[in-house]
Length: 293
Ligand code: PRT
Ligand code: ZN
Image (cartoon, rainbow, N blue to C red):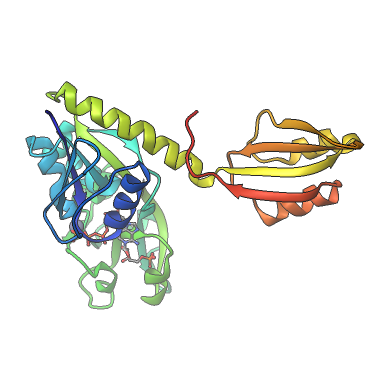
């Protein structure tokens, strides 16, 4: 019987989020994390644990059917003219979000893309950076580095950098300021554009549908509250991303009803305070574990 072969980063930022998502999709794995292969016990899925940079190649060559990779790695492979071109995004996974940014010393002369003309830029994403600058008519020298790109300006290796940013703390700590976003990235599920096995695709479809349920339910909350009947419309309009709430009678009360709603956007404290100000009481916000639309 066909098993879906899935490439996942062995350790790093994509490994944890990837495993977490697969577990929430119901996959159970038998062994610890230190093996190259992991076999799901309850579904026809085999995982191959590898370095993220190798994943596009593994999927393109057919060694794996699908893979979880940062969009930044995929796009770099595509711009570099390597095998990433043979891949497509099957599903955006919503974790490991980051941005690829151009940055330069905070107090230096480089404040915009135009200031990069004739300068040296250090990056682990040479093809992406080059394409971005060429498109804007800038000619600059690309200095390829495989890590610690943020130290390049201080070491006079380059005047600017193009690197991934999530919190921005690394830039800050190195006296750098970002002035341009080159790419927004998140973890993505990739597969070959052509030449896939229908049986593997069918297994992947189940996982993707479950993943969508997991991703959608992550921010989604179930809100329950009691609402004065005469404030019902105002209260309904405050509920973030909810379409049709359920209204139920409360025994012995005709001035107050119970309202239950699924909210598809983040529910902030400010929202709860606004609901309370409109007369809502007994407000409960519950997490939703699984969801099928
Ligand atoms: O060993 P292997 O090659 O598999 O791992 P790796 O070192 O290449 O990858 P890893 O685990 O560091 O990152 C894997 C993927 O996570 C990246 O390709 C991105 O898609 C994604 N990701 C999300 C990030 C970040 N956020 C991130 N912040 N990758 C790297 N960083 C770096 C950033 O460049 C900075 O140097 O983390 C540092 C801290 O960032 P700040 O802004 O929070 O300070
Ligand atoms: Zn890597």
